[in-house]
Amino acid sequence: MLHHDLQSLRLFVALCELRSLSRASDRMNIAISAASRRLALLEQEVGAQLMKRLPHGVEPTHAGVTTLRYAQSVLRLADQLVSNMDEHRSGVRGRVRVFASSSALVQRLAQDLASFMRDNPQIKVDLEERPTAETMEALTRGQADLGVIVRGIVTHGLTTLPYSQDRLAVAVFPEHRLFERASVRFGEILDEEFVALDAGTAIHRLLVEKAREQAAVMRLRVQVRSFEVMCQMVGQGLGIGVLPEAALRPLAEALGLRLIRLDESWARRHIDICVPQAGEQDPPTARLLAALQDNATTISD
Figure 1 (tube, rainbow, N blue to C red):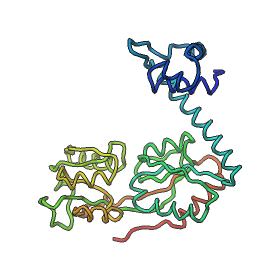
Figure 2 (cartoon, rainbow, N blue to C red):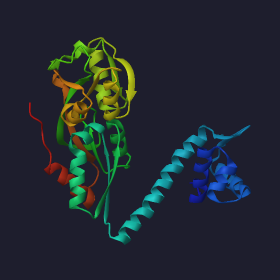
Figure 3 (cartoon, helix red, strand yellow):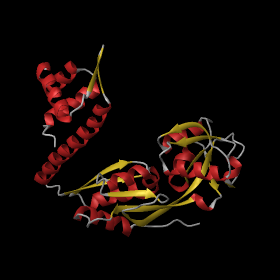
Figure 4 (cartoon, rainbow, N blue to C red):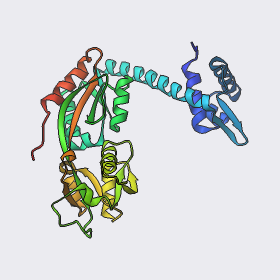
């Protein structure tokens, strides 16, 4: 077992970020000789060289990268403890860590969380927007208390509950050949250039899978990280996009885009709430889970 201290871990993280021992020691307000000794002791405990000396600084070795991730996790937990104790002293009596996909947030989760926080001011909700796969990993590792995901990935070790649905539509710019269409099949747009979300998102995985089933490859012209940027890029004529219809219709209309219904059975997607199976939820998480279940809805045809 390592017998490190938090100060040494903070120094190591600073060193990896700044790539300079002198700058890292300045940030930590310690002498460079003391910083060097702390690094040497950490390397001795780990049993491996953590930093590679370069002509103009340093960079982490492979072992250093692994240690950096560990140090960040330890420091995050330590900071979380301090924050939680501060909140107990100030009267905030609970915290729930929520990870959710972009689709879930724009569909209804953001509204439901805002309502919950108004009704439960003593509970703080830490919300992170993450792709479905990352949300499930965070739940499995204990880094999140509750997740809201797009159904489609095996959720081994998690309890899933239905929450909402959305429907995918194709966003096109005014000059596009399909602008006047009310609906379109996926096969009709496979020769188009796409403005797509990142590869880790549920929508991207779904579209790639369905294109593969038709022996086709999507032509990705631009990949972005949010629906808002996707709409902006589509509006500039850089391609077409596939996104949740109801939640993003106001934004699309404001940009002059046309949302065309994607006429496929798989275009209707289920959004689920996920929690770890092992053990019961703490009271704040259980209260949020109950509130989200009370608000669970479906969409009409």
